[in-house]
Image (cartoon, rainbow, N blue to C red; front, side, top):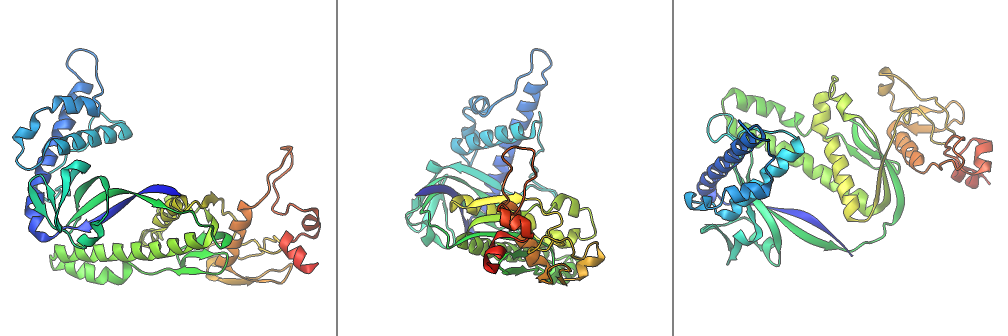
Length: 380
C-alpha cells in the first residue's frame, strides 16, 4: 500500500469570477508588501541584513486581516509562506511584483488552508462567499490538505485541491521497455508501440493567427488552451498505458535544451517531450515502477541484434526510416531499433574489478558469437 499526493482541479462557475478577481487583487497587495519588506530587511540602511522567513512575515502581518474585505488571516499566512519559499528557491533578495491592472496583469491566485474551505451542501464556502464548481460530485468523500484558486489566461477560475491518495502496488505483466523519443513519432517503445507525432498546435495555427489579426484575443487564448489540453490528454493516456504494462521503464536522454536552439524548436515545443518524461517519472514512482534515463548516443545506427554500426547517419540519414544491417542482414525500423538499444543499455552489466569495460552481453557465449544472450539461446 502506497500513498501519494495528487491535485484535483475543478472549474469554478462564472458567478464567482468577480469576487475572485477582487480577492486576487488583495493577494497581490500582500505579495507586494512581502516583497518590499523583505528587500528592505535584506539591504537595510544600517545594521546587519536579515533574511526574513515565512514565520517572520506572519508575525509582521499580524492584524492585517482586518484591513482586507475578502481574504482572511489564513490566506495572508499562505501568501507569506509561499513568498518565503519562492524567494529561497530563487536566491534573490527581491522577486517580481504582482501586477493588478494593465496588459501585463498577473494571473489571479488565491491560496488558502484546509480549514478555510468548507462544504455547504452542493457548494463550497470560502471567506463568507458561496462558490459553486462543476462536477461537484467528485468532492464527495475527499479530504483536502490545502489548495488555491488559480486563473488561466482565458480568465476562467479553477479550484486546485491537494489530496492524499492511497494506492495498491500491482506487479506489471511485462518486465521492461525502452522508449525512444523523437518528433516524427513522439515516442516509440521496444515492443513496437508508437505515439504518433500529432500536430497539437500546428492544426490550430491558422485559426489562432486569424483570431489575433481580428483582435479576438479571447478566442485566440481559448484556441491555445485547446491545443494544450489535446497535448496533455494524449501524453497522459500514453504514459498511463506504459506504466500499467511495464515494470522497468527506460528513456533516452534526448537533449531538449540543445534541440530548442535548432530549426525544429517549434515542433519540439508542440510535441511536449519534456512533459512526457515528467509524466512517466512521477507515475512510475506512484505505481512502484523503476524509471531511468540512459545515454542514447548511436542507438539509431546500431544493430540491436549484432551490435554493428551500420545504420544511416547524419541529417540526411533521418529520411531513412528502415534499414538493413550489413553484418547479420536483419531489417530494422529506425525508432524501434533505437528503443531496443536503449533497453539493452539499461540492462548492461557493470564491471567488478573496475579495469574492464561494461558490456551488454554478460555471458561468455554471447561475447564469443557477438550476439545478445537471448539470440544465442534461441539459436541453440
